[in-house]
Length: 193
Image 1: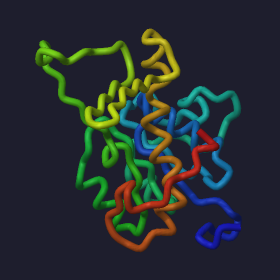
Image 2: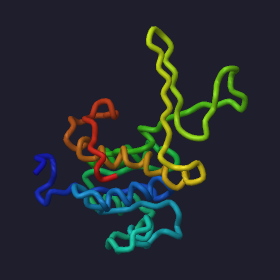
Image 3: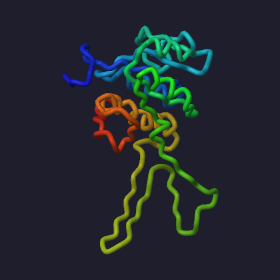
């Protein structure tokens, strides 16, 4: 057993927000053998009181009901909160950290792309994925694409964004105190994604 895990072998995790990416993170928490869901914070009042399993599309109830109150998340005493809201709020993150709760989040690990309506001459665009060209003595041209058709990408891409934060929870708990980036942590095993 990992020495950084609690005696029952699972870390107590709270999920902050249940939109597209948050719902995928919530499902990944429920499927992860080293994590135990203890709280879910939602921003949509219509989701308050609903079971976490219902919010992420699983059939089995979890017994954890959504709340809109940060006090409820703090009272659940999670070891870590997966913070995945649409907009980052430093006061919310500081409140979690002040309570001794680790925070892992997509907001902190987001890839940012800047695109103009008309790309510069010579730039090619693709439906999905990346295109990398390395010029030099041994030129390389590389195409990376999502394993999904463009019309399905919106349904699967939240998983790509959520899994990095979910899989970083155990490494984050084992890391020394302070702000960490993905470069500071060991590469997470993604077998539970």
